[in-house]
Image 1 (cartoon, rainbow, N blue to C red):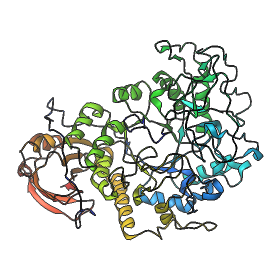
Image 2 (image 1 turned 90 degrees about the vertical axis):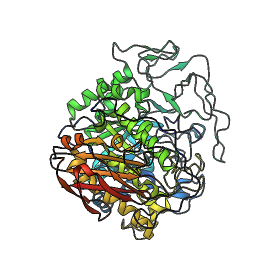
Image 3 (image 1 turned 180 degrees about the horizontal axis):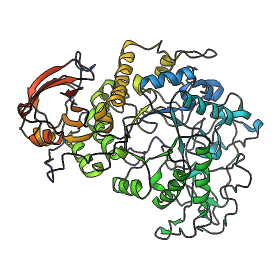
Image 4 (image 1 turned 180 degrees about the vertical axis):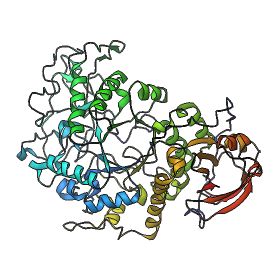
Length: 623
């Protein structure tokens, strides 16, 4: 979740390779070296994984932006000024192209009804007070009704749920599984469900508001205090009535004061899972808290519609005991439904997998942070070894890898790498390092680069999640216009954008067809090549590893240097040949199956001579 762009990344719990090289400016810096020698004899290899593949390819669609063809892009513009994409804009043709692109799962972001400034009261939907809405279009993580969908996304508002169900059916017809957000930690300040099933009690209904905490309550209260809007809140020009909340409720990011700060998640209310935050976080889980039951029923509601999985917002702010209880019950009814946790505390990874029963976790504080430093020119590949050894070695197949999502800055932006092609080694490594899933954010494959303040969030290198907007690079791929259907053929893309998208498509195809990448084991080769063991091997900028299964053996080498071509010989130790069940006394052929036509032969004990231009990779099949 990201509800304020001013929060630092550490808190934000949120060339054209192979041809011509990259013109880079500035001086590259590296962090001080530290030993990455294996702690034990087997610490250079991950535990072999099960035969079932976890190599999903998830494509995150920010639904209200995906199909918007309006190019007005007025800062703080209204829905009618800037336009908004609809469920119906995600056509069968669009889904077919995503399938060809190599996608297995589509994550539709912003589906469940959330607070927004557009007035839908004519359709029986309560109007939201702009003082507790961020941006004109509102945060998709300030849920207003767990049992309804965002009216912005419907052509025919009264039939909005039917339009979503049709999108769900279209997605399945085109062999794509569907993920949606589940936001369990907080709701919009004016939460009210007018679409809940008969007999369902609303959030907060029946709460004892005289108590700061009660395990039977859904919210936390500040008795005797009225909520006060933070200083500096920006609202539209038209007159706005003061928002009234008496007594004040605790704010979503665990703020227990009547006036939260502007940088807090002030538009949301914290949900009560039986944890008494003001009394040393004492837990009250027996009997099962009311919120647990309500949230389990909400998950069952969406799973029954055919949703294939949930990306769970700020999962670590909800007790792990709830997850283990709820996920077990959802999977008992719908065994194939998957759960992905947005989580930022590596010390809790194992707990949320094995106790919380999550299928996959964000690998943000770990691999993403490590490769981002490399992409920005000041990291070291030694961090990659540290990440998998210390944080995810024996459950790497549970880690979701990515370079972009709605919370993170775009690779092409000046706030990140400044060039989308910098992602080539980082994305290849993220996709092939282990067997866990891969995620791509819509437009990443086109080099989307936000360069102006769209509204609430300002110019921060991210595509807005709060305001109505059109994404020019993505509109070039959809190739439509207002009032005319999109072709989804890339007809307006530049040659550079087409080539970038081709790279991502080839990468997706690689992970979809490679047995070693989908089901194989991993073997880190850094320890065999660093500290001068292989002349010319830059242990800070090169990363090499093996992926191997019974059917396929791969040597993968990534050059993260923006300026220098790497010329070296990659050593594969005898232990690695034995691990792959290959004879170390033989000579083998090495053929790139990804981006180049590189072919060579070498004796197993002689090492593999390689040459990699700046920001390039080799995926060499060993035969």
